[in-house]
Length: 498
Image (cartoon, rainbow, N blue to C red; front, side, top):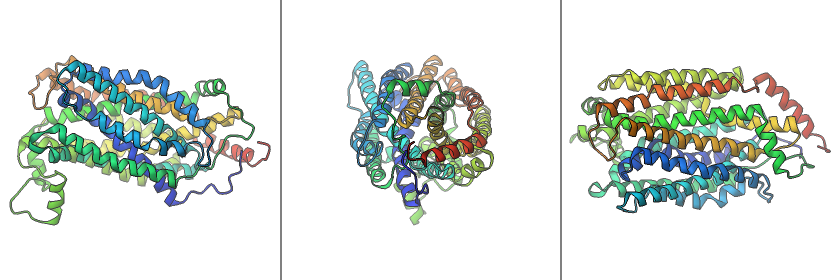
């Protein structure tokens, strides 16, 4: 393996790399929070059918994701193994993003479901071809433990910015762009705007990041051995289960809270809460700040419009808390206590605060926002640690087997991420149908449907979070073990015959 003369990564390179996760999250956050609701309320699909659409794509992913990992590991170019894929897939990735949220005006629900399945599957396929190499790139930029944590921390600062924008501004922008109440047009304009930004950021990654870790010079391509090494790895299996259930939970909870705010939260109480924040339209206001908020659709004019802005503000609070939590807590806690211990404690607290969303009365808006603050603060330190721990898994495989298959290691976890996204959305869709949710925007729901929405926003996602906590106890790479492993790997890589 080539000697790494300098494992330090410049701040400019870290920022350039981080923009790629901002781009990915302009897509991912949209799918996590709005995909199910888009299918039920814009496409008019039954919840169970919407869930089935998402599950079909997972079948394709089972073949696509390992293929991407194998292809990227075997790519050899003057730009490296992983960087070229980020550039090559940037445009098609964003085109399929727009198509997945485009309503072609098809009347037949069977054809609508078919269109949704094809467009969603194509988007998920291109997500793999872009995000697996992108994630793998982060694992070969440096072997320094602290640098790796720093890279992922900055990366997830940018992902949190995307979370803030998508979760907070999507519905207000859709409303703003909906000429004459045409929601489909509003969605198309909003997604197209995000897609253009995402494309620019992905191109920036290609010109910013550098690959510094390469496989051992004598390593031969052996797909069967790579598969055997990865699947037999206990740390990889633990991370696979953790990632799967964390993203099942995030997809379920994020989408469910959308329904929670529209169907459970009292519109009058939410309107009064927004009035206290200065987000209610008044004739007297003509300040620059008010004009900016109004331009982004963050000014509400009546209680029946409070849902869009209220849910946006709720999400922006969570994103801001998470943003500062990543900056101030993640790297500090990981360096002091280790990634594993930090993840266990923080994910446990996250599950507890998630479960507590079962208790607020529909007009107790303040309680809901406090819970969101606490949940976001607890979850924040885990955000960058997930990918830093997966990079450690790739090192562990090299440490044990004297072979490196970074792309394949990350491909399996990206599959778990996308499977969690689809399964979480599918579970919510099936729950909505089971509790009697009626598809369509603005339809009054039964008490049974409301109760199902509350359960899907609290106790059920809390339970799936706890499965992730259990998986972490099987993850063997502690802080002490990682330091020993990295020291030995550095010694090996310094030798000319390695």
